[in-house]
Amino acid sequence: MRHVLPTVLIIGLLSPAFAAVQAAPSETLTVDDVVRLVLARNSSLKEVEDAVEVFRAKVDESRAALLPGIRGEASYARIDPLQSLTVPGMGTLSLYPENNYDIHTSLHQMLYDGKKTRTAIDLAGAEVEGAVDRGEILKRDLEFQAAQFFYAILFLQESIRVQNDHLKTLDDHLAIARKKLEIGTAIELEVLNTQVRIAAVRNQVTDLENALQKQEVALRRLAGIEGSAPLRLQGEFTRQSIGLDADVLISGALEKRPEGKALQTLKRAAEIQAQLAGLRAMPVVSFNLVVGAKNGYIPDLNPLKLNFVAALQADVPIFEGNLTKSLKAEAAANLKTVEDRRKELEDLVRSDVEQAISDVTASERKLETVEVNIGQARKALEFAKARYEAGTLTNLEVLDTEEARSDAEFMRLQALYKLVVSRLSLRRAAGDRAAGPSPEKGDTEPRR
Image (cartoon, rainbow, N blue to C red; front, side, top):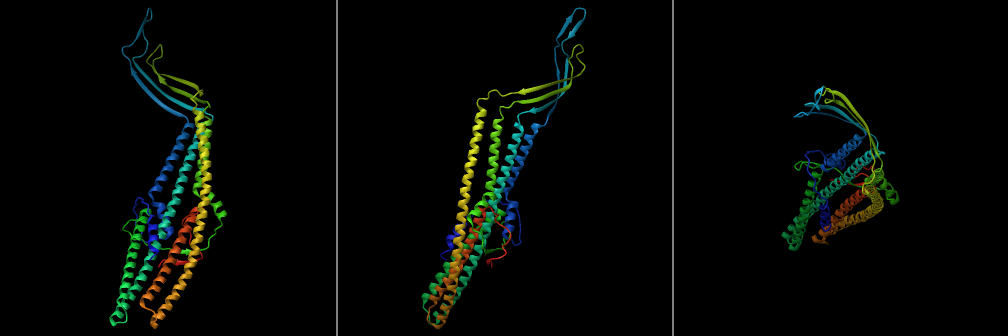
């Protein structure tokens, strides 16, 4: 068919490589089932989920600064030779013991830092939210890739069926042409022309089967299905009226799309970063306590004696080479970047929605035109067969009419497929999920 190869080439571009995960589902899969498999088994998504746990651990690390730090230490040192001092009338006194022991526990507690630690904890929490947002974006992308593969496979399967039906019709015409050639009521041109058409259709079926195999391989890898397991899909191309109010869809998309949530998180992180930079000049006050036992106290140097040291410590930044100023400038630049990206996202959402609406509208119009064309092609075929039986049309003229009817059927299938794909694009642009409950109403083109 004249319309097959461009579509096959376009579908072939939808095949990214993903790591295979072991699975062996043999039951029939709907588009919802395929999406669930992808979200449950895709290795890229598991990697993002692991990264979220890493950032959560960093939050706990930041909180550790609010708790007291306690350490235990013990040391032993032997000193030779000993230093001694001889005092008349008192004898010889050692200045330190030969065996020195020191066992103590130290405690450090930060008392005040101008909320720098708590602000750092908030920043780590924003990083966790950012990792979660990236996971949601990846989930959205995987869902729509899975749905695209699913419907591409349905389209190719149905295209092969249409071509095989057309091939059967051509085989029937070839048999008739050969019989007529034998009895002298047809010329060899009719046989040759039919054979040429059969060869062309068979080549197209081969191309479609090759494209189908590639799509199935890509879907298996994306969903973690074993390459040897049968892939049975159940679905349909639906025609259902949907709202195409651009303002409503754009307004909702800015709230629902994960990129919007991710930008809000980035903005919050930039604001916290700016706040943290402004707190660098705040002093840090901490309390230190050391309690333990050691020897070496005069006059009896050897026995261990309890001792402690308690101290308050203040650390006041005075000059850091304009580091605070530079950090504030960096935070302000990050915040400005996020605001610019927000405006860019609004423009992108509007463009995505408007283009998707245009595609849906165009697909619906094409489908209406094609359905009218199918009715006309079927009537033309009935008329041609009647004239052929009456002997006023040749076999080649009937074949032309048959091919026109077959072309019309494929064009309807192609229009339905493009309508489904354009609706998927609209759902993605509007921030909806790729798969969901089946529509309650609407004309359908079932998979046969």
